Length: 312
Image 1 (cartoon, helix red, strand yellow):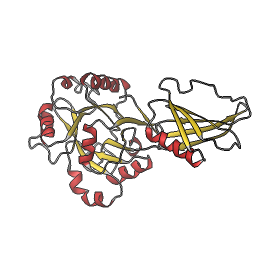
Image 2: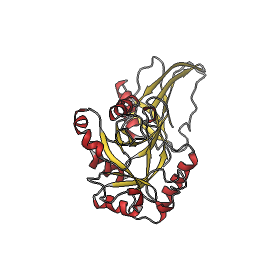
Image 3: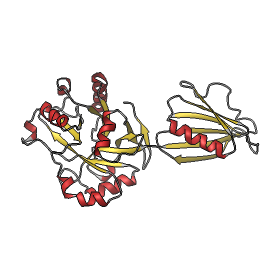
Image 4: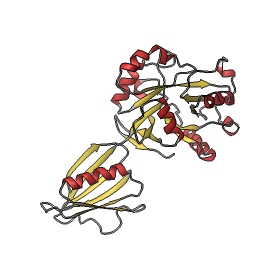
């Protein structure tokens, strides 16, 4: 959460400079929007001062005086605006605003993942409802949804990417950007390293899915495989947060890309965890490139359409 302070006076003529104090880590897009508001209000110059540790450092707000003190609180998916005067809140409003796009990288549908309870159409409708900007279908050991739903994917006005969650003998691995799966089956007899090599040979991106969920997936393979790009550090299907904590620690220790996904099997689970990207993602190659470049950030859904950034 990042706090900003804007001091304005009721019925006062706009001055030449509007001061804004903000935390240093605030998104520049958010500051740009506030700057545009100031210009529209008649301020020719916007003075932005960054305070990385104490956004409210300096002169305290004169909330006891008959002047208007505007406080803007920018979160991951909502901006709260309040005007305080005479020690009372005289106006407040919650504004949903978020730059960039949020994509759920771990979603199952029922046609090729028998454990799921939603169709591709249900998943898209729910993703829109929850404010997502795209989903990635990662069915178990199958990419056939792309072939069967090709016509639907061409007509729907919503980004749908197709990946796969392969159950190797060492743990589940999600891959994006594949043209084909390995010929050898069953996959549960395939070493994790073999599948990772297959992904890299096709220029894809792969990450370990919920590597600490159970006894089989105890995460030990993470220390001996080569070429793994990332680790799912937030998984909506992990009922204990300890599994996510272990995944985050392993990701930091190994210096891999942190990934978040809902592991949704039902419509209400979409977007529980997802990834934020600063720019829209047009296709799978662009998604793979953005992930490899570390442009994504894990987010968690707080409500219907509200998301907050999470520690990587």
